[in-house]
Image (cartoon, rainbow, N blue to C red; front, side, top):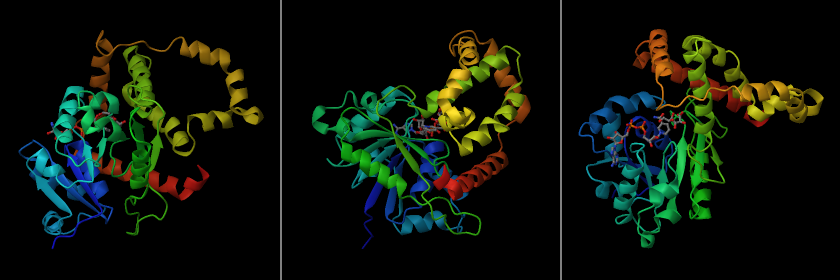
Length: 335
Ligand SMILES: NC(=O)C1=CN([C@@H]2O[C@H](COP(=O)(O)OP(=O)(O)OC[C@H]3O[C@@H](n4cnc5c(N)ncnc54)[C@H](O)[C@@H]3O)[C@@H](O)[C@H]2O)C=CC1
Ligand SMILES: O=C(O)[C@@H](O)C(=O)[C@H](O)[C@@H](O)CO
């Protein structure tokens, strides 16, 4: 008789995030995963990519072993994928209408208590649930669990409940992610300290918090390159030689609290107020659908600097990310 795992996840959408989520979920021994993607070649994508995302590529029969032990099941329809699922998690395209249609399809088929999670970068649970029948209680069960790429390595999970999401479901998702072991560290064993860091937002805003911060920085970076102030490569180097290392150890507010001397952040904000206000008043007001001169420069300079992003580069960068996160965890208690 096939093992029935306590957590039975249906992963809908197996692209960049879906494949990384699959590798992440497989670290929990109490979880089985059924996957679905309309792409006809998604099985070959799993076979070629998943081993590169796991802590160790494992044997050449890894995927077949996972299928044989019913830890992994490949589906050809949404209905088949969500059958008997305790959690349904979508990583479908970032298109509101597409996610709304997917939840409407799921609503009529999923069990009444199944947890519903979206990996969206910025589309709220309430927007995704709108259009579903109230009787299906999608709004009460749906929340966003927004990862930073790649979720199999990156600790942040931004939990964004809708106004109707049941509180116990927020607690459930926080515990589920909090209990997922981190990637194996050098020496082969898994780090003892908690890896995933769920952070719950109190309100739905476009882009949530992580992407609002990231996109504010991206906007100013694009403006500065577009204005010829700095090259794309030098701006990247400036970030990795300053803000990157700083923020890996202390966040925005803690850093300025330290920078304020004895008076802390209050003194910092007071002492720096004129300069801060001058900068805030001068920040670039570019529009991504407006004049595109800056965009041509950003794209050209980035491509000149880095060329095509090869699998080897991606692997090297993921190893760097793994090392940074592991170092943080060794100090996590002090952050
Ligand atoms: N790429 C990134 O850095 C991050 C993306 N996200 C979010 O994750 C979601 C997926 O993004 P990516 O993985 O980058 O996109 P992707 O384009 O790599 O993958 C999307 C997958 O969804 C499949 N798909 C299309 N329609 C579907 C449907 N109706 N049901 C199930 N699957 C369907 C596609 O075949 C494709 O394989 C988006 O909501 C995105 O905002 C979140 C964090 C980071
Ligand atoms: O930066 C990340 O990994 C996430 O915050 C994202 O949501 C993606 O970058 C997103 O903005 C692009 O899909």
